[in-house]
Length: 205
Image (spheres, helix red, strand yellow):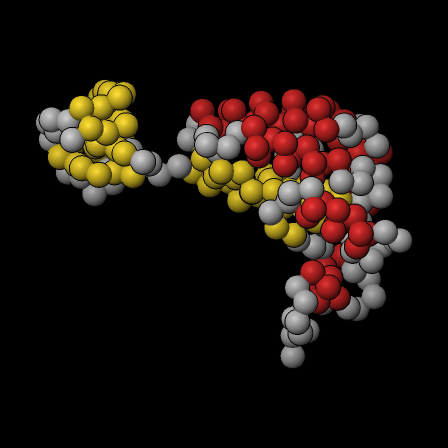
């Protein structure tokens, strides 16, 4: 048997003693002590625990590594934080976001994260810049990290003219999924964004 990777002397959660794992096509095809197989790569796990790749289900990669810009001298409240964030979005550029976010993806991969859902703001200030940046990032890391681009209307779907069209443009740019912020609606109709984003849905009874 010829495989892509042979892990020697490792433990899965169910293994009482270390075993060898033969991997081909991203799947374990054989397991047991002292496997005799040909492998493109052989690694000695030295008795280490083997786990599936970790999943980060909520990461705002368009905003990552801008902590100093979002730390005022005193806590301004949530509305104040939204305004600080809005001002920062005016500086967005695709290359700048990709550069910041690439370091985070690389560190995540180094620590075992292989799946990530990355959120991008879509609104009037930055437009679809964040979405386009994360699509570029996703394609750059394809094959190493499964990165899903999620776009959502940061300032609410019906906050101003053009919001719906910007969301459509973000999807046309290659985003994978859409989200919303229904809890922030102040008109008593939190179901409205979901009904627009999910045609055919009905408000809860």
